[in-house]
Image (cartoon, rainbow, N blue to C red; front, top):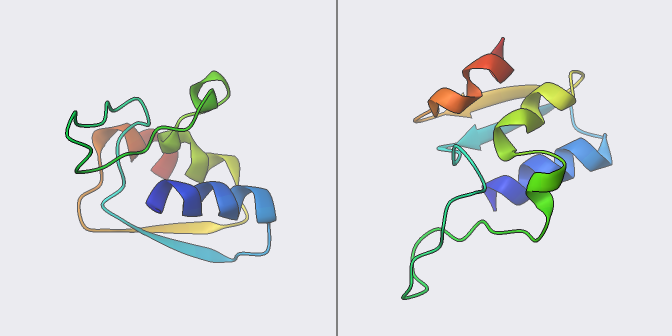
Length: 78
């Protein structure tokens, strides 16, 4: 739900802050064959943006990271 929450905060616009714990570095991650583990596939989503770009798209919403922050989010943090 971390990825979904980032998209909701972008599209809704009624959030002042969002806390993201251990976000995935990309939505391009392939799900495991056995169906277990992280599944973050959203059809055609990568045509417009990836998850690491979402915090930078909504400047009025403060994003706070908890836990491990993937390297891909570093430019978005600035």
